[in-house]
Length: 87
Image (tube, rainbow, N blue to C red; front, side):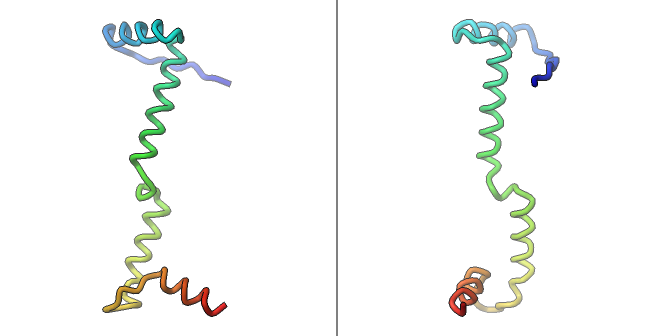
C-alpha cells in the first residue's frame, strides 16, 4: 500500500527534478522514492553503530564497570575469554 504525501518545492528545483525524471524515463514519484532510499541508506551508514542507543548503553555500562580492573588494561573481552576457558 502506498500513501500520498504533499511536498512543496521551489519552481527551479521542481524543474530540475522533472528534467532528471525525463532523462531517466521515470516518474517524479519513482525519482523521489529512489532519492529517499539513497538518503536513508547514507544516513544509516554515517550514523554507524555508535549512534544506536543500545550500543551507547553498553559503552556506558562498560565505562562504569572499569573500576573492577583498576590499573590494568583488562576489559570485558578478557573476562569473557577467562569464562569461556573454564567451560
